Length: 84
Image (cartoon, rainbow, N blue to C red; front, side, top):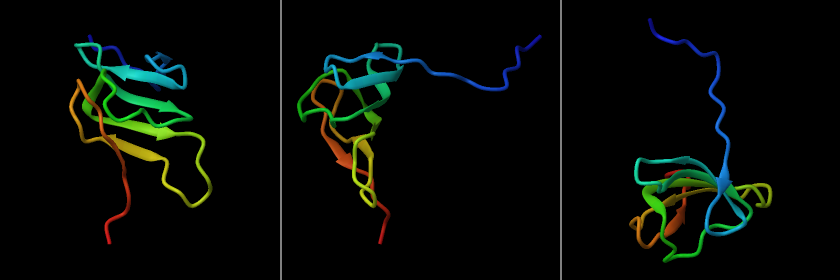
């Protein structure tokens, strides 16, 4: 019998950087979804390719969503913006 849930709650742990909350990890332990006040530094390890990061400390009208276009051993987060 399947188990039904009304909501899913993700709880975070701290990534290597104190300002990053890792909310979801893959089977390797790499971060898939995170939030924080500072975008991870390019070259940091531990973020899966395609990891989404929400910067919770941005100005109004500025995107707060970033995607890791690097690799798991060296991240490169770029802002996700609306296509023109």
